[in-house]
Image 1 (spheres, rainbow, N blue to C red):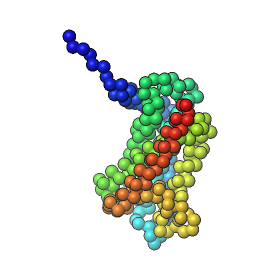
Image 2: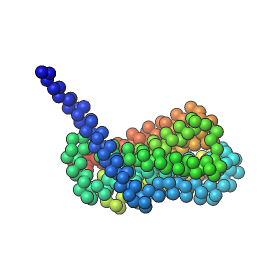
Image 3: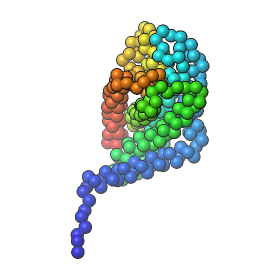
Length: 268
């Protein structure tokens, strides 16, 4: 007779954490699909941004430092990143409903529950984000967008979008664990819009002036946008890539520290 070998405690907890995270992520996605009002904004809002900004700011191509003669190549990546940000925010905000219903407390009692409730929004946001990317990217290409960067341009755009989604999960969780009510929603949106519009979301940095230029210059989102856009306005280069990666890594560290300290305070 051979004796059964007991699993290592750490390994068991890791497995349970991943199971909890995946189960909660699936629950979040199923719940979202059951509510059309929650599904439509995933792609309608970014598409709206593409149409409105491309039409309203079509004269941007006449600016001396504008890097492309096709305004869609500038606006489509920006709109996709905004959609990715809202995907991350929406996935994390479901935590508020779980807290209100008492479901959150039951999950915390499970082995690996604490890690699961943090990882679940990341997984759910990634799926929501991929859906947004595909729809908005295809829509932009159908309107006449270009992709001179080829496959590397697609990789840069998709990878950056998933990174922004994960960043916004950290931002949203940090706020939600400190303000666990529906009143947190406006604060989440204001944070996203301020970060976007006080960057190169619409106008290139070289064509900005005054305090807006100063803020956009030091806004990490400016380099993140450059990382995502490079394949649609030219070739993908390391000089455009590494500042975006550094900005994303730094933002990830700050926002997820904000989220994890919020988790500890809330579950203390």
